[in-house]
Image (cartoon, rainbow, N blue to C red; front, side):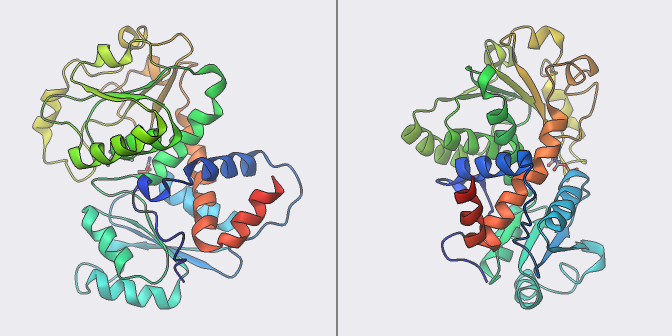
Length: 317
Ligand code: CP
Ligand code: NVA
């Protein structure tokens, strides 16, 4: 059953008040060396629908669910009736009779919203064209793990895409300033930025936009980029031309704080948005981000599927 207080996780704003606790919980679980028999998803089955390929999301969900005592059921879109001969609403009703939670990676963001509206169990957005909230939870977890050496802002260099949208929302919630540089015409969605700015105002966070990578990277504690062309945009090859000067290379990161960390949600297109020299440098935390997908999602799954167990573990901290 969907818990009326915790609901779904469709965008990072859905965890607005609780994201700092979700992250603390995940960090504690990651570092917990007590012999706890903690299986909050015992007897539950979580189904994951994929309309697009995935390495990190699929494996981190399957392994995380298993660690929490649950069963993971992966549903590739070509193998199920969704889309070709069954509506999203009917699929939601049917899956709600079998499963305890659904994760959904889809093309159109409205599809994951429709699935959530018609499901009586929690739905987690595992990436849509507009949002990637599980990535943002893992990214902010990674930043919090490094906070002792970071006192500047997050700099985003690249497309105004799904990963940026939730990174801005999550930064506003956690309380870290963010400056993003996107090419002209590829700015993020203004409605999402306005929502982030409302949250930021309450938390004393600055959000600023530019079309100049050097301007945002100067003095940054975090330098973040993503692919120039996302899944589902492969036909938009001309988009590449807009990214002249947006590669994250040594010349650019030399403008950042000397203790900066480099972040990328992966998969990376080496030689396009980032050079090997930067992604393989000692400043790069990209594989910590990938690992943290699992811990952050374990926290989110427990929060949505077994809130009492989530609270009880929080009390144990
Ligand atoms: N970062 C991320 O979502 O990776 P996958 O596409 O491999 O799941
Ligand atoms: N922006 C990328 C993120 C991949 C994890 C995409 O949507 O393809």
